[in-house]
Image (cartoon, rainbow, N blue to C red; front, side):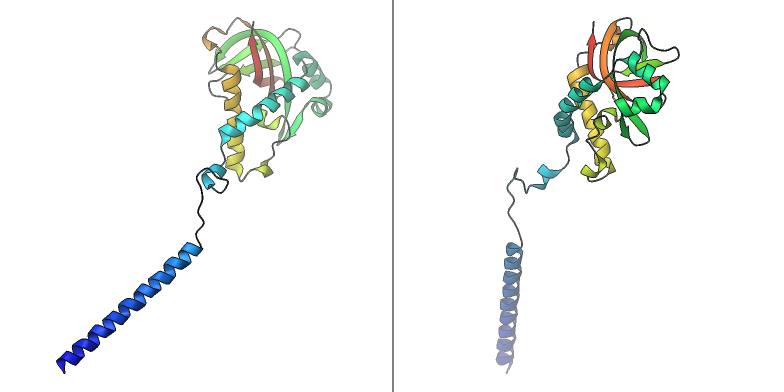
Length: 216
């Protein structure tokens, strides 16, 4: 009788093992059917789909630069137009971006004192009381270059963070191409020619982000 009970118990344990093994096999098969093999570097590789602000900036900056150069009035023309009719000047030269318009400009002037990479520039013919400053880095702030074309819109990005990062990526691309060899320590007193853009928060105080800068 004891031998019979032992055999029965053994048979039950064996059946349980078989059932568990079969269930595991079915589960593994189901997982395999639901799993796609993704080749590294392919379009399906999510790492390749993550937003890269520096790559975006490098791709976008050349068109932004060319557009600003093509559109930019000289500083005295722009200042005169703003003083005469700000709305008309913005409509003719600017791009509406958020609360404040962004305007292109080009000028030649003498560099004054600088702080944190931002230099005042004296430009002949500017109306009294209107000042120009240019930011030369190393850190470039603002979204003028992102916004000036009017083609880079928030809806093209996943969220606000990506939109902000796009502007920073463009700024870094500009700095690498335009400002990398600039000697800021010896810039004061020299004559520079600048083409760039600024956000018109105060029509008499322009902080220009360059797309081209030449030291004479």
